[in-house]
Image (spheres, rainbow, N blue to C red):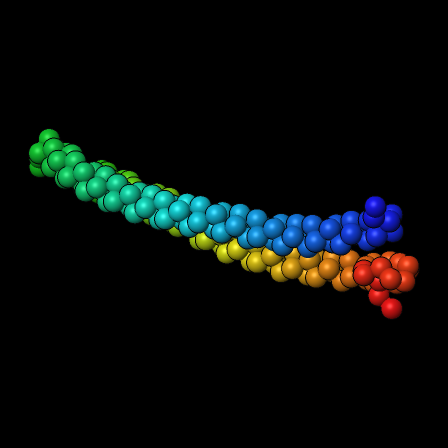
Length: 171
């Protein structure tokens, strides 16, 4: 039968080993999670960039359609007004049309920039997550080292108290 003090010593070593392995696994899990989240952030950034491109293309297409319709409207105003056309009214209408056309492009560009800013934010979040994962992994290695040192200290303290002749005893 194994003496209680020997059994406590064996349990202390096993507990230390479990603490060391647990700390290392915790760090690995944090790093794996950070890597996965960084990949999601990169995907989100690419989607935002694609959305920005689509918004710009849509705005340019809408602007071209508007320009064509504007020309038709302005031609109809000229044809309808004939020689009695008020140049002030025509110029005012033309200015309104130009401002509307400009606002189509501006709105598209502003939306595209918002998507690009979201892409940059996603990339920054991914980079921060990777950094945190690496830090958690480093911290877990330090915790594992601390657990190993603490366990070794406990082992030495208990092993010195074992009876002479016990193979686990440290003199």
